[in-house]
Length: 166
Image 1 (cartoon, helix red, strand yellow):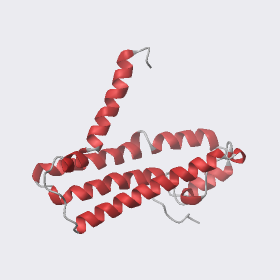
Image 2 (cartoon, rainbow, N blue to C red; image 1 turned 180 degrees about the vertical axis):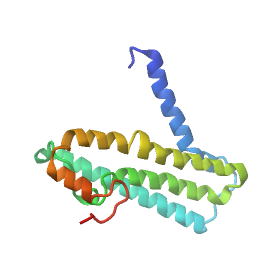
Image 3 (cartoon, rainbow, N blue to C red; image 1 turned 30 degrees about the vertical axis):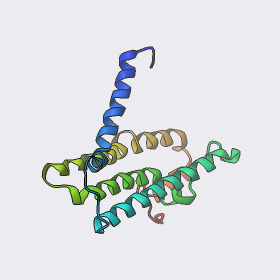
Image 4 (cartoon, rainbow, N blue to C red; image 1 turned 120 degrees about the horizontal axis):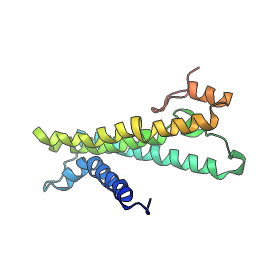
């Protein structure tokens, strides 16, 4: 990519735009002079953010630990949070950004509500563009012929951690 400067610049420009859009609620809050009061929106936002961060961190740690074991080479993870969701880390990521938006809600009025574009953007990106679709295609190519994978896929929620279907 570095041999093609325009392609390299486009790659980083798209990343910068993504960060700017996703961070809209945070940027808005940081630009305010008044501090948020601890009210129901604050409690809900912090709860959502904390839950999302915990889910994402635990899911990533579980997958990293799973992949680190030689006996798991070429296998897919079906334990821990991965028993309940095929993409629990993305679910956690979405909750983090929605939690930050909820924190901003008491300060929003009129056009300021447009900062909802941040969590909407990351949610759509993960659901339909660069997150779940890419990993689902990759897993299908790698494990699609494996009956155990097909059963895991049938029983396991794609995003929201839910009890496995019977």
